[in-house]
Image 1 (cartoon, helix red, strand yellow):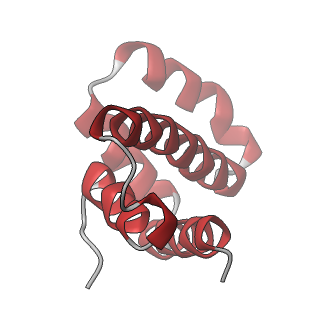
Image 2 (image 1 turned 180 degrees about the vertical axis):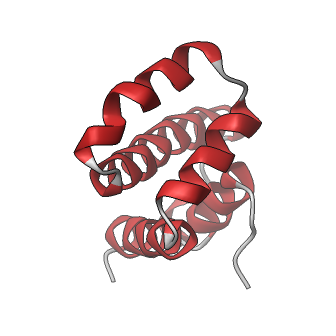
Length: 100
């Protein structure tokens, strides 16, 4: 079962790549940070693509002024299939990274 939080998920994906097993820890940490940032951007882009266009101005205001919890609640309301979209992005990221 894949981990639920993003850093653990990325670490889990990296660990599945045999050629990285002997990589020095500092290099692995740097790689993990870069992959986490990339995955966050992919998730954000996928969710943003699902927001109705008329909601974008309101969403931009939320990003500037609302708490992370409020933003998540808003996305849950606006994108009912949010969890499925995130799961799809995670799976696609893993498959592309591992070349499967």
